[in-house]
Image (cartoon, rainbow, N blue to C red; front, side, top):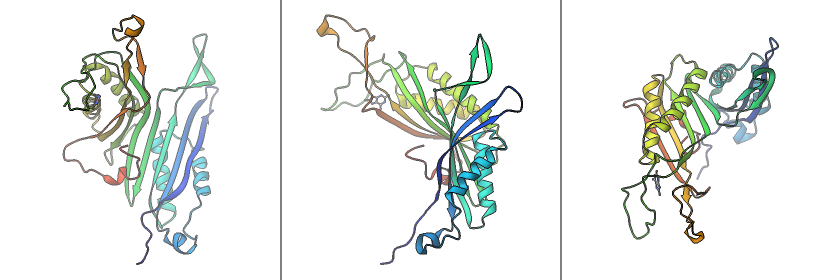
Length: 297
Ligand SMILES: O=c1[nH]c(=O)c2[nH]c(=O)[nH]c2[nH]1
């Protein structure tokens, strides 16, 4: 029996880079956590300890900081620059996977005016980006996680099969809450203003969540994906991973009180986990773009 090396990649994870643009007194800040992973011919290092192909992870980290000196622009463009650099500089590096989380800062307002150089971290959601290089191909994913949404009514769950283990009561009036985690894949070659698309996708997710009665989180998830794909031709597909953050009405009868859906126990676990790919008919599934993404997205 012989033992062989399978797929491999390596690099530096979670390089925290903060870029301040200070061309004038009104500073700009960009705050990213970047992971760089190279793919290619690294067999000798794994098999014999020959490091001649191993671009150090330390060098990959330094490259992130050096490239930040020219500005970041959008996480997607920054990762594309890194992909082109590593695949263009070392002929045995045939591809890789570069990912970023980006953290938003808003200017602090003082007496109603935005401050030039003082910021407050915006805790709402974390933006994500992925670039996968596979030979000459470039796959770009945008995304976000931790966008917590809740509506206090306009949601129910009925009509499901019942067996001897079913205790869940049917309802047409429940709290619907989730932490949206989603990624979307840009059509290859599309000319994209990544920052503008990100802002618009987030707007659509928020607005669409409110629009209709939700018969199930599955229905709402499909509506979110449909709305984004209908508005953005440059997006090929969306993937979602949505926890159903259950809020259970507490029985207050032992205390002589009614509870007309006003007092809830917010359970943190277990939670329903609702996931799907929402795609355009007939498009190339581009599996390479998603390889290495945890779970659904
Ligand atoms: O929106 C829901 N989808 C489900 O699949 C499900 N299952 C469950 O117990 N409650 C819910 N709610």
